[in-house]
Length: 141
Length: 391
Image (cartoon, rainbow over all chains, first blue to last red; front, side):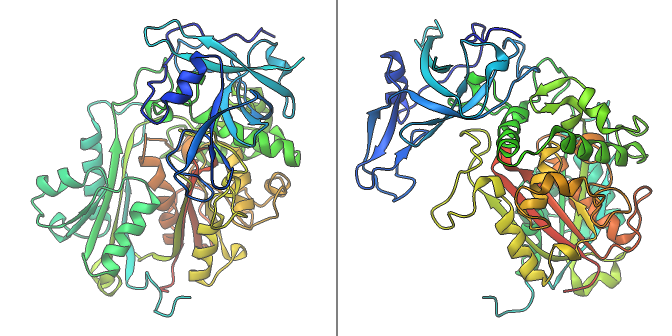
């Protein structure tokens, strides 16, 4: 067993684009954001130009509760690059508002992960020049 | 829906060739090994380079110039079965008479500290979380385990079966490495839970090619022609850029979720062919990870949803079973030559099976082969049905 922590090595970091910048700016402010359709209310992630359900262009950024539950997970022992510390635990989280996000689980032992467990977002600054803050997830106690 | 004749009636596969496949092919780069594959497939067809008037694949431009066969029809489509279908369409549409499809990869992945470059495309929503193919596919497999109780043992049985096919195949990179039991797979080190090392594809180098021709010209070719009975491709978007959610659906057919990707393609291929799963004699299914074989049997309608684990344990997938899988050893043991090479090799093997020229695991009465590519973790699955009888 080992305690899962945010990665601190030289990992590949996102380069926000014009569509995704509001998402990453939210992370810098400690808020997880997703897009919602003004016409049909459907939530969307990853950042999009049109509603995935009704094709409306009227998407607005809204704040998430940051809470959800683990939808699926894996525990990686062979790192994608040597800069990643193993084990790490990629998770898909089903958010309360009905959208999915890919992240890593942190703040618990690696064998504590299971589908259906409640989780909440926690932010971690990469410390790099671009001021990227990554959303991770931890178990709700 | 279709009122015309069979869409591929006028097309035949008449040449197939794999170069030597190896962990490292000294003295080769991707273009040189692809060229070797191209010349091998043309020779297998009994043709000359000058007979080719259409080329598909990453080698296309280079081959056109080197062999001075221009002007000719060209497509850069690199991805296995869709490239074969595109080549067939070119012939069916009268754009070409003899189409070469060739690819190869060598020298692009020899430092193994990181996973292979094609397993980890850069994307801002996945890269920072250490994602690569094994983790992407594991997220799909884990969901299936949760819903249906699918076991690591059933996945390991798939991996052992495919690896044993490679163990007895003299052309496989891992020839003679076995035999393997499911226990061997389960005892190998964990890569991305639930996948052990031996549940996963390997990496290697190699080239592969095939030649399509007009069905009314097969008297001029050297080998027994093999026909395209039906085919299709199912894609949900770019691979490895968005969360691989089992339940990801579409607005046109909400019942067709990403976990069943390939179902629509298989339904269409079977409908065009006038066949069903029970007619398939050889399942040349793509095998990036063991779970994907279980998933494909469900998606294609060989068994009900959730029953794939029991299905693969029922004696059907081994040599001599009703639906033997991935008979050359697949990407786990035969070869996984990079971003695209192995995506063609299920088709190559399907043709070899129908010709009856496999030196190992030959299915004696093979009339219909089902070849596939892709997988749920990559959000696409392609399907091609091959047969000995002209449709």
